[in-house]
Length: 374
Length: 137
Image (cartoon, rainbow over all chains, first blue to last red; front, side, top):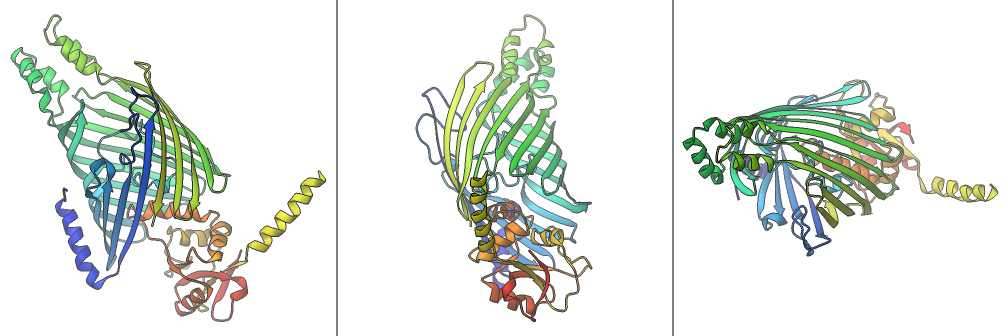
């Protein structure tokens, strides 16, 4: 269990705060189960046998007002995918400067996507899970500070978030969990919403460094054959990564529409330029909300990396293979429903058909779940 | 389409019978006016002051109180589940705290009568001189 300094501080001040101030506890939990339809199908960590652990989670949040507009919040999450070990998912201090401005500092969620902040809180949305073709960056935790600016523009609510911080953790690269640092992350998000319409934009950037030891033999061989520039074009060594996201949603007369588009790139690395988007349509019939959604992921590789190598170089095909492995062209369709069977709990069901458009392989997944808040 | 009217009349009657009239109340000394949009703003955490600039403390009824669902649907235009989902988004991301909850009309009336910043709601039939009604829904 990793605890950052800030997280530890927050935990300490919560403990200290409990003596004088009131500590509020809230929580949420999701129990999810799923299985694919055939032996050769794998999706989102599920295979052909029923699994109850993979996406199940329990979370408890403690919040304490320390007076003078200062408060402290810690959220502990226990995930089945992590053998239910406890982690501080969020741990931060909040200073409410005035009605419009607020600062959060500590361990936060990186606000990449529209549903990033509350993606663990299944009760807060209708889907069984957020669209995975889009919500697929392997990390979304940040240590740093966030400045929020909330105002009204006519009948619209405007919410801006400025964030600065760093990520120090792991990213799965070519199937290998690799130590990763993303420094100097800064970004801005802007959300405009009113009763039935919302719009969101996000831009973030950071310097990406990934320690991928599996690449060392290849890099040594490239270096020995005078291809140091190719190494630079492949590896992640303080390379500028950027993220752009755009989202819209409508909720009118019980019709629900959500659309989100994201673009991710990392300069001077073999990471493909990722375009992904989804469209979801649902209808609320009181407690019953059926929906359909479609997702697309189209990742363009960078052939210029191996095209720069001399013809006949013994490693050219190896490099070309590595670069080509990042190509993704997939589409996914989901159909499901949410049923509010209890005032604090929702039952969800979802069928997913994911198609790899390069190999034409299909993965079919059926998932059920219960999301609660307390 | 007579069968249609026959069906509609009892439905209209039942829904009127089932839904009590919600009276939104403040402290008698509070001169602020608040329309439905203003009340919604205060009860969704998007505003913390009355139109005149004075601090506002919204008070909610607990979910177990029957009038809560009426308030959520008639005034806020949402179901109680939708409101709970709305608050989960804010609570678990450190962006807001839902209004304090009181058990019933009597507790609500006493709390509003005792706090000049309070805004709450009770069944219109329970209103007396200890509180001031600023809107009925």
